[in-house]
Length: 90
Image (cartoon, rainbow, N blue to C red; front, side, top):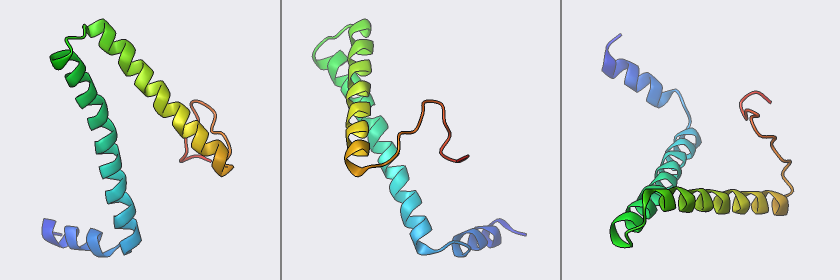
């Protein structure tokens, strides 16, 4: 089977909602990591933060993101996922 034939099989083997969901997930992940990277670069290059201060601010930003996710989960009534649990093996 040639590469183009395999690519066509993969492309037509899934429905449109599958592709929309996965592509939007990729963009979501890219924007999430870009926020961390751009924040670190801005703080270091523009505001002259030390690497130690950057680590602390990154940790703070991470905790704010986790708190926002937890707040959203509580408001939506979703069950809490224990740390270390896999979403794929439920």
